[in-house]
Image (cartoon, rainbow, N blue to C red; front, side):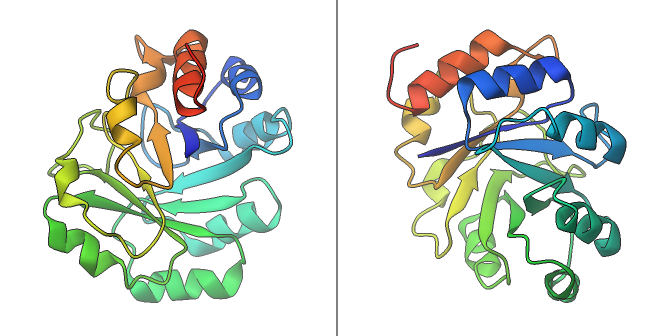
Length: 203
């Protein structure tokens, strides 16, 4: 079971990640209270321990901008969290070899089946929220998942209390953001406890 801590914004967040060793960390380039600039990410990425992969989270961004960040090694993976079309993804594929994660807001089981044909490496299953691309902090009905034809990240409302259940869904990775925060700021102690749960140790 892989682990991703998303929405890191501070040097303290990177230090906590280096200690807790998630497999992935996420930087949000889209409009959000967790949004970071290219310059901030380059600086934070330089502090990240080798072996932890950086994911850039984008919403309907310019593919040229995304490819530039990936090809310069500022990010390792691309997470598309908007309404990017198949043609958009195909164009991005010609510009960079970085793996692509396509986020899907799950409202019904057919949403997942339709997304499996996307030319991406991973899916990310998140909670459907009207007029929002994610970050609701709420879970969705995991019984809708069923068999998924691609490895997927499970997101949306994950925290210490539901991690054991989430680990039984068949997800490739668990993706947490608000569940490792206190008062809107990443909490190193929560990160430690979640990492211990996922990695099979004791908090």
